[in-house]
Length: 160
Image (cartoon, rainbow, N blue to C red):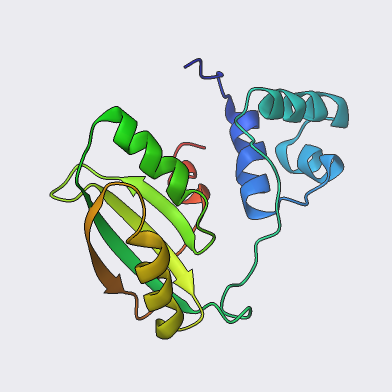
């Protein structure tokens, strides 16, 4: 994988956009101390290289009534590449699964699942997650409170 060289201007652009994805090129230029043309060229390069994958609205799941969060450990019956690929493809189709990570542990995957209620979560677990290909067992941990949730910016600031 080819990683672009990021200088302090690029990192500043990324930091600003991570905080405010709607910042204009003029705002970015003013913040980083360059004129609009080189700032726009840098922005286009960051987009073209895939460093910036896209822009989206950040929704508040609590205000949308989706305040039940569960973390699910998934143990697989088969961990060969074909089985993992089948699981990966199927789990991506479950809307309630916000995140799915393959884990190096005594279980194979950790899923973050968001629903409106415990009842709805139980339905998702029984009808969707447990029926995913090659699932042997699951364990659920219910979050009581989100103490910190950030995007990429969390660890990136230290490098900027």
